[in-house]
Length: 235
Length: 235
DNA sequence: CGATTAATTGATACTTCTCAAATCCTGTGG
DNA sequence: CCACAGGATTTGAGAAGTATCAATTAATCG
Image (cartoon, rainbow over all chains, first blue to last red; front, side, top):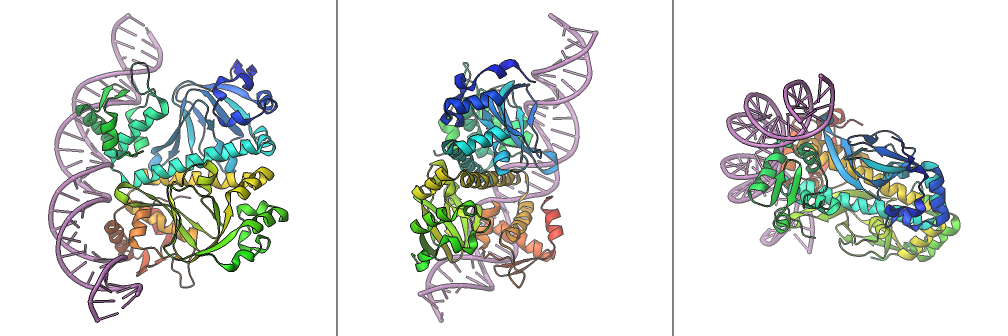
């Protein structure tokens, strides 16, 4: 899975803009460049495995991933997604705990591995880098709170409607207007927290009601306003 | 609500041990001491209000709090609890976002307010303090992931059983063996993510089955093993 | 003590899950 | 490029789990 992007410098990395690495100096970026390893993961490949102790983090350069936990009787629960610019595995490294979830590539994904040691060196060196990491962690914590409230209080129908909107705002749409992410019905179910059959039935209902257009795994949102209303989404 | 504990120094604070403040030097602790304000909150008093922008964090010295969000139609969702040694409001401050949840005292609570400026000054000064904050945030993020998985996959009965065990491990028990926290049935419901009536019925069942002893709001766990099994709690 | 608020119980309706069966797709090897 | 195996999707029927509404009783607090 290793690839020859390793010689590419973080200094010129276009995907760096707006990420936590953006506050680093050229010299600090060079430190990463000198120690990183660039890798490619195929669709479906597990990037990090729940329970393991990671030796560093991946900086996602291109692709999409799901973060998922094992639940009751092996059922998968998708906790969140990652896309270009995101750091994978930061939670476990920074909390000094084993990975609380696995990370799996949803499509071919390129990422740079930053070893633990260099990560901590940068934290030591740069308070603003630490600050960025805290910001990300705390932002994700706020998101988690929202998800908790939704799971606890919304019906499956409401959660599915909201999740479709969330998928669109996270991954955007392709040129033909479909959600720019390919998930199986089971994955959608594991995200919404319901049975696969329920997901299928509700998606069909949404389709009947002309809220969305379905074509295999391609999903196009048509009536965003109605979806938001149906999902009790206010913001 | 202000109280005259303000003149107490953080250096001698017994509650400081094992908290994020424990890595600070005496000089740094003095900085906090010089700028903090000690306050007391009565039971039921809102300490921080969802949506507001906090000007600092509270270091909880004595008492218990709930962190809760407004959900559908004003229904409260309890996200987590705080107790002695915990920092309140750190998520909003560190992510530079409004408070994603309110914090309310469950009993008389004493806390020291640390202004934003001094907090950030310490982050600038002390990488190990930053590291501690990250650790807490990332740990809480892992907890949130567990809660998400439970809410998505477990039945109400399972969640209630698990939550009783969680309450015991969080707050411990009083001398007579009851959970050392007093919650209404509604609050338990808002924690478990169910209707108050369902909580009442299930608690009665647990009582019938001799898993717990109920006496008003006092709850004593009797069969922890069976509760864990019933709640699919493995760790 | 009233007056609220909290807790409890019952009846009913609704949502969601589970199991089963059929059909459709998709990736793969020939 | 095609056929095919195995997985994914779909649909139906029935069971189970929860919520909701209503009515009572109990507890708590000025």
